[in-house]
Every structure is written in structure tokens, then in C-alpha cells.
Amino acid sequence: IDAAAEPPGKGTGNLYNGAEPALPTTLVDAVTAARRDTVIAEILGSDPAYDYTALALGEWHAYTREVTTWERDRYLTRI
Image 1: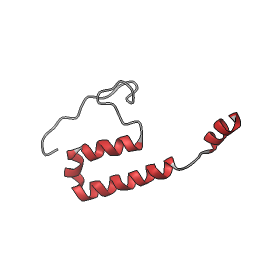
Image 2: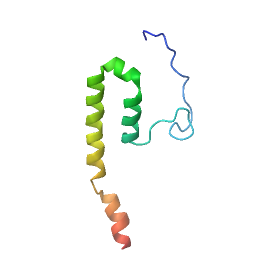
Image 3: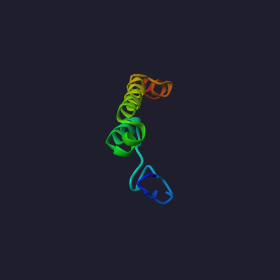
């Protein structure tokens, strides 16, 4: 706002595939992008921005350690 930057135009179609810039497809990709984005650090402050992304990474790590019902049904029945 202070820099009077104009937001990009409205996206159309599948914004996860083929859009520029493409939206992150995973939480870890979003955290990586957020940590590279200096505007987020300027808005939130560098410590709160880091803390927020650290919490998000904790969520990602917890998610990746879970075996879901869908995974059990899909893969354990094929053995």
C-alpha cells in the first residue's frame, strides 16, 4: 500500500497449474515462498513472519507423518 503497488489482474482457470506465478501446491511450498517474500516480512515483521512459517512447517511435518484411511484402503489392500 505504501509503495502504491498495483495488484496483479484477476486470475482465471486453474491457478495451481499454468498460472504465472503459480500458486504453491503444498504447504511446504507455500512456506518456502512466504520465507522468500520480503513484503510479508515487512508487513508482519521478520520475527512474526518466521514464527508463523515455523508453525506452518510443524503442521506440514505432522501431516506427513500420518497414514490416512485413504492410504490404508488404497495401498494395504493391494499387498
